[in-house]
Image 1 (cartoon, rainbow, N blue to C red):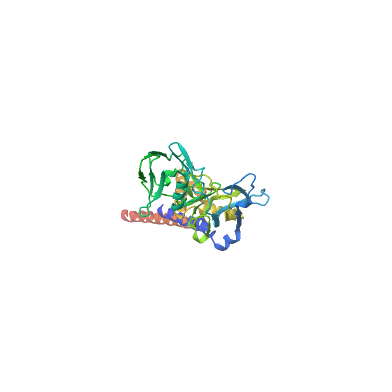
Image 2 (cartoon, rainbow, N blue to C red; image 1 turned 90 degrees about the vertical axis):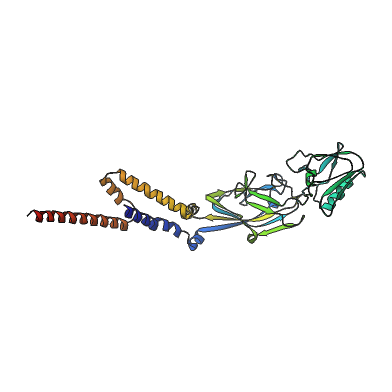
Amino acid sequence: MIILIQKYFLMLQKYNIKNIYNLKDKNLLHYNMETLIFNIDSRSRDISIYPTHSKFKYDLSEKGSSTIKNVVEMKISSIEFPNTSHFFNYTNGNTSFKIDDVEYKLDDGNYNTDDIITALNDKTSDTIDFTINKNTGKIKITTTSTKEFDFSNNTDYQSLGSLLGFKKNTYTINGSTTAENIPNIIGENYFFLKINDYGHIENNGKKYMLKLLMISPKYEMTFESRKNYVSKIYKFKQPTNINTLDIEIVDYLNNNISLNGVQFSFTLELTIVNNNLLKKYHELSFHSGELLELMLHDNMLEFYNRENEENKKEKKNLFLSNNVGNQLLNDMNQMNLKKQNDLSSRNNLKSLNSFKFKY
């Protein structure tokens, strides 16, 4: 039985698994697959429906009525993204604070340490002074009388006080108080590009196609090509039809950002298959070699369990109708005949010896 199982396993590998791997021939794939390349520009959106560049719907066809069929892979090969969002903005609630219940508010924008110190002093009175220690990098508030500072923020973003390095929401200052931490006014280091629900990058329960690293200075463009990417490819579990793309640029809290009227664009590559054979290939190509082997073992055991439950005649008929191959059938028949002949020869020899002994 062990020998039979081994032969069955090898024969299945020969006639099934090998054929699956043969589908990976590069010439065959090249002939049956096609790559469609789209230049997606936020300026092409319907402005009446999508007023901002960071959220819009994109039709893959010119008239928006066609569907891209049998997509097996999506890839972003380049992106042109402006670093123009304002880190300090009213929507995030990090531009205002109160002193003795009087609200003070900074203008939306991006600041370095010197600029924000100047802006804070310009907004407050002469009795309050913001300074920064060049050695420690920490901000100090000095007052000529007792003042109540309130940096509370009613959004999920950090408050102005927290960004300036102050850990608490409220302070009573008479003299001077230095922030516990150094200020964090650099701005966001990254954003996410969302395309429908495609992608492998998870953030706060949602999936994204890619993570945009803000490597360029403020108010400059970030250019990334394929060679700079770590992972910007999404493979579908099965061929998928795509008509439109819901595109968004969001921050770490999954909220849309404002690019302040500046467009962004990227190159999208869609790989499609052209026939059912290649569809089957891509469905199987997502299984590892180990998984395919486990599936093979499982089918093999199921086959022999079924065989053992049936009578000899049915088992023989079922086995003869199996599509494993004539070679395996011949081998197994030869093995059975050989064993039967061996047994028959031994029995005949025993009978003959017994007969000679008696007479």
